[in-house]
Image (cartoon, rainbow, N blue to C red; front, side, top):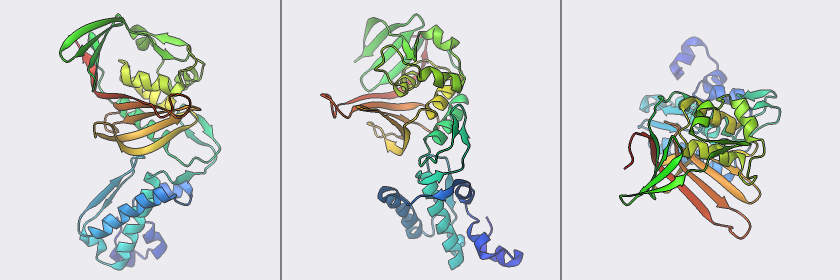
Length: 316
């Protein structure tokens, strides 16, 4: 990063020096910043106050967009100008990270989602696109069973779609697992392996009314990502397809019911809200919750908390 002394030697004007900070490119690309909500402003100010309070300590903040600001140690604050620029950098990047930047450029595109001519004030599609890259980078694995370890117990699904459970050390077989739903398709283990991984085609399937029609596109994608042995390429395609669903919202950093940190994405319908909490480092779904917001079940929340998931060759 250019220092204050460098600006004097190189003849850089003050405006150029002020804009020389991490996050300036994102701000320039955004083109317009909406006024902060009270909640977002509180988050941004907390970051700034923390940096000022710990002036001699390196501070780092990372938002759901993957933008990172590293506040250098005391040497950056040696002059008032350096302090000013550093705080502007932190404030701006925090604004980008909290999702208050509006991308107003007409024609901004997201892979598999088409063209967006309207401004969008959140970064759900950006986050999901980033997570799709993480998902695609995971190793390919195989096994006789897909094990889903939850807070309730362990579930095992065989390649022939027979489901077994291990709860408190006891094994029980419940019979054939219901096929996974993707639009009009009912998918078994073999069907997953043969399914397209193209985000645009997956999005088209998600947007085709399923059987039963009560299963939302978000719920279908979340279930496949949470409970099925979908490979890295399919998982990557599903995350990108989710980014194309209208109404998907980035919540930001949260903790699941076990206290693990992750990034949450929500999808609201007329009577319910679905939420997935994703580990941004691995793309694993930590928790999927379904909350009723209307009707006789209003306020009821269903949790599916995944402690670990993967292939295994034996039950128990």
